[in-house]
Length: 101
Image 1 (cartoon, rainbow, N blue to C red):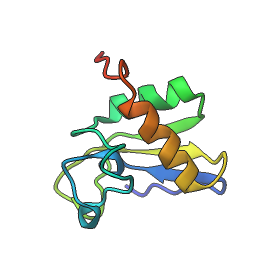
Image 2 (image 1 turned 180 degrees about the horizontal axis):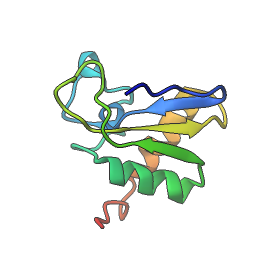
Image 3 (image 1 turned 90 degrees about the vertical axis):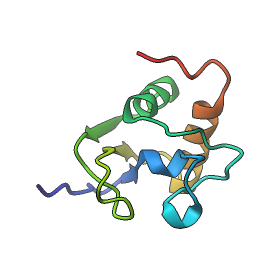
Image 4 (image 1 turned 120 degrees about the vertical axis):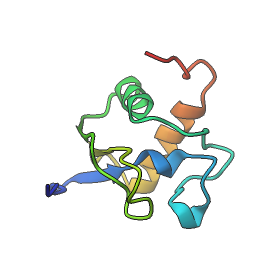
């Protein structure tokens, strides 16, 4: 299946925020802001709390980890991608944001 990013969207993968992964494995935020093995659901919860509009592709695999179907999120752009990554990473690493559900 082909997923296309629309103009004005950025792609976020859970691996971008994974403290157990190296930068060469796809992590995009500093390790101090990363969390261990973030799930797609946890990423969605952080985006909800931050008020971002997004759409989810559940069965997508990151190009560096093609055997792991972690899913991805297309986020409506509100600032630069690095700003969005930092906001989401801070929300994920915030105490009390580890609610499961």
